[in-house]
Amino acid sequence: MEPDWAHLLPELVSIISKKISIIKEYVNLRAVCKPWRETLTPRPLHLPHQVPWLMLPRGSPDDFRKNGIDDSYITFYDLSRSTIHRFELPFLSGKYICGSSHGWLILEHDYRLSLLNPITRTSIKLPSFSDVSTNLVIGYKRKRSDSFDEKRRYKRCIRKVILSSNPSEPGCVVVARFKSLGSLLYYCRIGDSSWTKLRADVGQNPALSPTWDFIFQNNLVFTMNFKGEVTIYDLENLSVMTFPSRLMLNNACYNLVQGVGEFGGPLVVKHSVDSEKTSFSVYEWVNNGEPKWCQVKNIGKQVLFINRFKSLPVLSSANLQLENWQGNQICYHAWRPMTSEYFQIDINCVNLESRKDVENIHSPTDEFPRKSGATLWLTPSLI
Image (tube, rainbow, N blue to C red; front, side):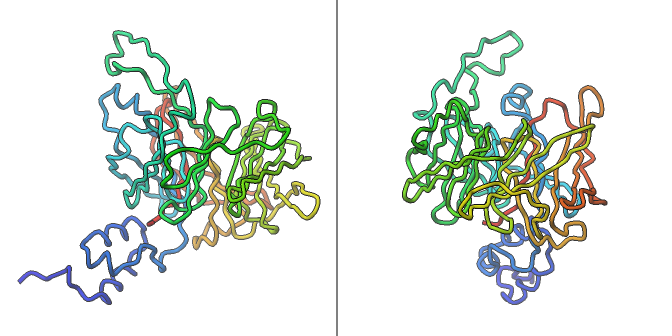
């Protein structure tokens, strides 16, 4: 007589689950059968805080289609275990990955955005933006060698997207910046049928000071322009405030980060490369009567994960229970050329206060074609 695993005592199923230390294996355990899924919570309390995974480069849908390659696969590098996780996600096929937020991938396709959790395979479709942005499609003159594309080629129009929270939770708001609309931002809530434009502050000229970056902070949308000026949008009462800035950017690359500092305000991470050495400076937005940016050298137990491209958001993780991740660190990755056609990815981590590199940070050993797509960080989520 074969054992009836589906009716195993819930106490024993719970004991088995606590032996698992990898989030992907926990998902597989919940998928064994309905009773096990009902016994095990979506959020395992015994698993430590998740170190973000790095999505490895992949080609665009056009490249896959041209070469007849299945584009439903995606690969992540797990920093905590120096291992590779590969997923087959049919929903991903034919879509461009334009970001990640709260453990979900943000996909662009056919004049709309979709959200996909690669761990649970849950997907959410957002409203079409064909009535928001114009000239999204360009005519494509076929060559004899381009028989793969008999229609007009889709022109990507999303520059950056962020989520206010996990989209499976009530009240999630999506904010997007479109390439063809300058610095204008649009937002929608899960379930909306259209996008709504964030109105600009009185007297503000987006053409003269286009938005560089934006984040959610305490249910407010913070934006920063090329001058370092900060604009705050309240989506509840539709108010908007703009503040001047004394932060000298000097053409450096920078990213806004959701507040993890002493005063709870958002952070700015400036990074530059000098003599092949990457350096970082962090500033916190302090609003105690006279709003200003103050440089900080300690962000507590936080580790900031910087993406290679500034249009992708910075991830922040705290209380990572691993030997090399003690906090007050910045983790980043760079492309190292191997040949004229291929490169490898180097993952580095530096202590913000001492500015010393953290040792024993392992990188993937794979080589990737130079024409591969972007890499991005994603914190795996089970909801």
